[in-house]
Each structure stands twice: as C-alpha cells, then as structure tokens.
Length: 449
Ligand SMILES: NC(=O)C1=CN([C@@H]2O[C@H](COP(=O)(O)OP(=O)(O)OC[C@H]3O[C@@H](n4cnc5c(N)ncnc54)[C@H](O)[C@@H]3O)[C@@H](O)[C@H]2O)C=CC1
Ligand SMILES: O=C(O)CCC(=O)C(=O)O
Image (cartoon, rainbow, N blue to C red; front, top):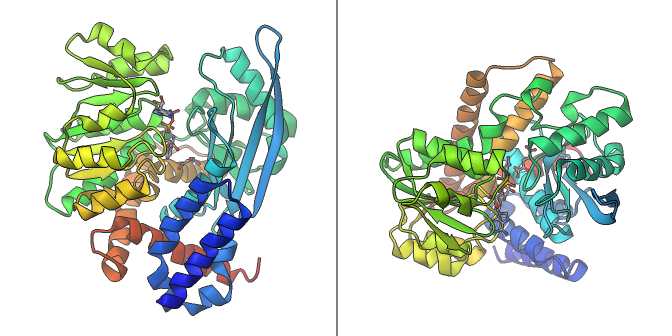
C-alpha cells in the first residue's frame, strides 16, 4: 500500500512541478488517484506501464485566437481551447464552455473528469473539454453568431465525427451549437451531422438530449435512494442554477413527487415555499434570457436573495447543485448537514469542494458524485452520435428508456466497486475505480501510445 501511495504522491508532485498554475486540475486528479490505490495494488502492471503518468497528460491541447467584431464594429479577441484528454475508449467527447472564468486549469480538470464519466457511460466515447473566456451574457444573437463562426474557423480542423465531438456546457446551448454547426458545415462542405451533439432535433439532434443531464441526475439519485428504501415523493429539494441541467432536474424531481423550493443564477437565488413554478423559470431563462430575480415579480410569495451561497442554508432533504464547480464549500456542507440533508446529487461538474465531500461522507449523507450522476447528458450525446451514424432518429421514449438503463447501470457498477474496495456507500470511490480500471485496461491493450 505504501508503495502505491507513494506512486500517487509522485504523480501529484509531477503535476505541481509541471503545472504549478493548475490547482483545480491537481485537486481533481488527487481525488481520483487517492480512490484507485487499492486497484493499483491489485494491478502492478498499471505502475510498470506508467498509466498514471500517461492518464494525467492530455493527448493534445489546442489553444487559439478568436477575433470577432461586436455590433458597434469594435474588435475583440478571446482565447479558444480544446483539451483532447483521452481517446482510449472512443473519439474525444465533451462540451464547450463559454464563460469569462474559462482557462486551461478549469478545462483540464473538466476534461480529466470527462474521461472517467464517459467510461462510466458504457458507450464508445473518449474524453475532452473546450471553450473560451467569451461571455455570451448581454451579447446580441448576431454577436454570438460571429463569435461562434470565428471559434469554429479554427476548431473545425481538430474535430470530426470519428475524431472529436464537442457539445454544449455552461454558456453553450442550442443557439450556439447551431451557429457552430453551420460554420463547420460551410467550411467542410459536408453534412457530417455527428461532429457535434446537442443539435436541434430538426437537424439531427436527439430527442431527450436537452433533458438528459437533469433527468439522468434524478434517475441516478432515485436508484441511490431506492437502495435505502427512501422515496423522493414529498421530499423537499434544493436546486442551484437555472440553466440546462437545473431546469430538467427540477422537472424530473417534480415528476417524482418532490417539492423543489429553490433555483438560482450567478447573481442570487429564489426561494418559493409553494414550490418552484418551472414554466415561469423557463420563460425567464429560455425565452427572455433574463435574470432569476424576475421570478418574484410574478410570484409574490417567493423571496429573492442576492448571492449564490445562501441557497445551501435553505432546509431540505435533498440538495442538487446544478450550477458550477466549487459552489458547495465546507461551510455550505455544514449548513446542509445541520439542516438534516439526506442526499446530495451533483448535477454540475465538481460542485462540491473536496472538504465538503469528506464532510458529507463523514456525516453519512448519501452522495452522488457528478461524474456518475450527471453522465446522462453525455450518454445521450453518444446516442445522438449513434443515431447520426445510422441516419435515423429514435423516439423520445426510446432514448429516455435507454437513459434510465444507463443511469441504473452506472449506479450498479459504482456501488459494486464501492462494496468491493471501499466503504459500501462511497460512490465517489466506486465510480472512480469502475472508470479507472476500464480506461487503464484499454490503454494497456493499445500498447505504449
Ligand atoms: N449541459 C450538460 O449536458 C451538462 C452540464 N454539466 C455541468 O452542469 C453545470 C451547469 O451546466 P449547464 O446547465 O449546461 O449550463 P447553463 O449555462 O445552461 O447554466 C449554468 C447555470 O449556472 C449558473 N452559474 C454559472 N456560473 C455560476 C457561478 N459562478 N456561480 C453561480 N451560478 C453560476 C448560471 O447562472 C446558470 O443558471 C456545469 O457544471 C456543467 O459543466 C454536466 C454534465 C452535462
Ligand atoms: O454531451 C456532451 O458531449 C457534453 C457533456 C459534458 O460536457 C459533460 O458531461 O460535462
């Protein structure tokens, strides 16, 4: 054990030495590697073949200039990225994020997580992430289109249906995917629908992709609660965010009979004691592209609070962070536990800090880690690729049925490995081990590449 602990520490030291400016990447790697120590013990060939040194190094990182002009004719220059982390299991796959906070550290941690998430899905997809420090908020459709066209004018040469298949993430939804796809098709002079997922259904997107991450999160959480004979019916649920993941998490939680009392955006959160009116949230966010505080204008019983952290002080049975990384820190975890939270399901990527996760686990809160619980989105993206390959479109029910099976399998596999190697309820370790073993074995099969 000491030998493998040292191997993990040496690998983390290597990151610190090579990339001292990437603390989030190092944190993410440390959590995964710490979990897989028992597996390294059982498989000395992983160390002999330097699997850890290889798995932390992206196969390729592309950075590029994205010049564009706003509606007033002023020129702007943003930075574009694509981190192609691993193609062991399939073409690189993962979303594009447009947000001012985007940098290489964030995209490397997201790409690293994506490799393991995609392995958990059981579908033929490798891992990647990309994006830009461009902020779509407050931009006109025309400005967003010009930005997307400029971004794709470089990215097109690095992607393809069997090479790398981007999709949406924060700040990249159906509108952006449409502009990106239009420019790709124009430059390549080829329809190649499978080059991007999250497309609109009328140009070969998959039914249920829009809903998939939020619905998948609830399917995963339901599996986790069912195993303890706990029902979601009449439970109080706190959700953060009001974007793609949050919206459809709220929708499915309500369909399961839960009462969702909050949602938020980067300015603040809404608490509605009667339960969130999802139609109103969709109207504000999807139609008007407005701020969540507008909700209280038509719902006088609801309260709006400035700032995001307060949402975790609202009493609830189940917490679903669906906004962004690091949104639940130790203090928020303590507030949730003090208020009696039973379960936390991560819709966002790495929304809980490492000390918050440890606190939940110490206090026996059922914890569904993002790479397992939010894998429904990328899974349906892989189903979109399959539909594009066969030039067919499946029904909503067919895709949703497959999504339910995929989430049940992810839960089952993570639980089995938690029971075999760690605390039986430690789904963080269970998910990390399941995914790592799969990726590492395929890397060995491919030789030294
Ligand atoms: N869209 C997808 O299919 C998937 C998304 N995710 C993750 O889910 C999370 C949310 O993504 P989407 O819903 O797609 O994005 P989105 O852009 O549709 O919504 C993001 C939401 O988070 C809020 N937000 C963004 N930055 C924030 C900050 N710094 N503080 C507080 N709130 C903030 C926004 O106001 C918005 O409500 C991200 O962590 C993303 O990586 C994970 C798996 C798949
Ligand atoms: O559907 C995809 O490829 C993107 C999903 C994604 O970015 C994620 O799972 O975080």
